[in-house]
Length: 383
Ligand SMILES: *Cc1c(COP(=O)(O)O)cnc(C)c1O
Image (cartoon, rainbow, N blue to C red; front, side, top):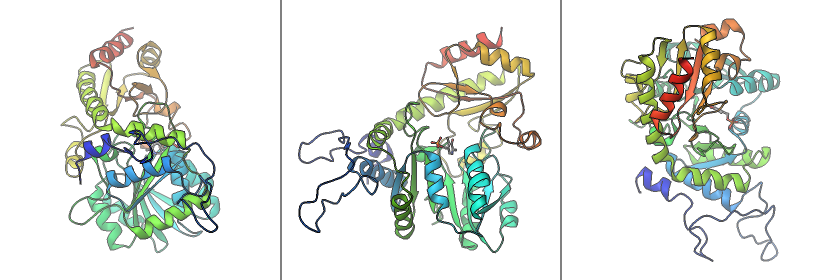
């Protein structure tokens, strides 16, 4: 088995023996002709399977060390399909500060169908344990919480899930398999399912919406594969190709983004207008040591507190190079204000409890020259 950077660079390579094409062709077809009565090429209909999507799914299976992977039309399509594993009356324990769309999906959609959830403090393993009841079926946690980048003790949660016979589901969007492979947390422990919004780092260019699910066991992979076809929220061939193309440079992009993020975080710590910086790559950040125990990197999203809401407006309206936009993980840096965007649907008291203040700004750091990013931030802060 090759090393990760090699698997990534060669993702989907040489899948077409008829032509030797290096890049996986985009099989833009809805259906496939059968060679004989009752026979199949292995592909029948693109919802059920498509060679371009299959190339992406096979690459993710190798990269995550999974039994099987499945590509969906978005991260939320992936999560919706996963939640269809559960029955009415089932219960999930979910880490607080989960992606807003995940909470909305659970509270506004699946709650009506009888799937309930309790939310617990990200870093408090005892709280997860206390929230488990006889109808609990799974723990859902993100590799870094959003926007304050808190770190859950994933090995402890994997142990807890095993003891209580629950599924551990990790949304690994913020760290990607380049920095964290949740299916293998060491000592035979691991998550059961990994889910990604591939719209972020995996595709990586702010140009595609996609989701991926990888399963640790063949039995789970079989169940998720069944649901992928039954629910039908699949990734289209063109977007599968874009995601596969993104994977090839994941290692390079993430190294550059993380390096830039650390440079910017250290610079932000020295600015008088900024009262607090959240970035687990900083050695004094609360998440730094915990993350080092099971991940190889810290990501490239950081958040910081300004001293007033006026300063937030000045900054957001002052940046020229950095775009004021939601999302994260792409090669272009993006800045956002969680309280009025990604977390706007939470009640104010809940936002305050999670540290999502009106003066908190989130920055997704791209691959630009960090000196230009810092100059852009400095000019905007100085206005
Ligand atoms: C963006 C995001 C999602 C949702 O993914 P989409 O591709 O936007 O549907 C889920 N989880 C996390 C952590 C995200 O950042």
